[in-house]
Image (cartoon, rainbow, N blue to C red; front, side, top):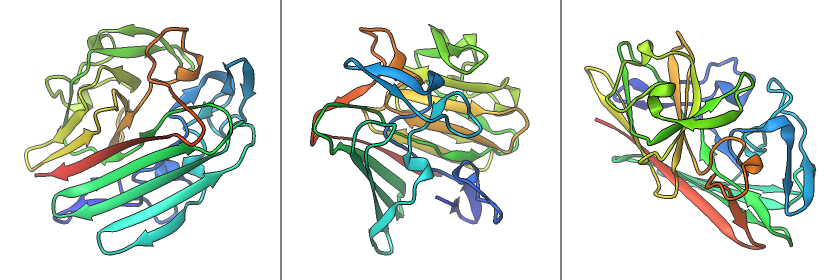
Length: 263
């Protein structure tokens, strides 16, 4: 997605004319997993998987393949665009397909994202969306969560802590007052708001989205609030952890959605 505005004012960070990759866009899909996989390696049901590191994020693999692949436009009209992507086996050992439905009407923007296991074996999976919101002057972010994943120097989750061990957004602090944040907030209630004196932008995710990954670089003109179905590096989570990782049986589909409104 390249832009989203409301009443002549940007809601999502507009994509520059000279953009050379999806990291500079307003929003992109995360499929078949979200965020980092440590070293691009994991073991699933006894099979070792080694993924090609994502350029610029070595040695990790980041955000799956959907954000760096061209999607096919299946249908569109004035209010809805449907895009599809089919992915064959590669270093990711399973075949899968994905679908995005992007709708815009008087209520706001809605994005639905799904992934289907097209393989003959169970496939680990996760979903997310990566909207980058314009950071208004003196803008505040309100986001309620039970905990946050603290990370090491490689930005890999190490331990859960209370939100204030990184930065607590519960009471809507100024974004400018936050330190550098690139962390996943767990036990999220699915709603986030970015507000200034002129307006409030609200993001609301579907009920199966329990994590919000906040990327708030210091001094930047944007803040990313990413609804995701699992925590970073969920494929290397300890046995028994409720990491959010989905296991899709052959032919099975998982889906999520978000809605962005302004008032």
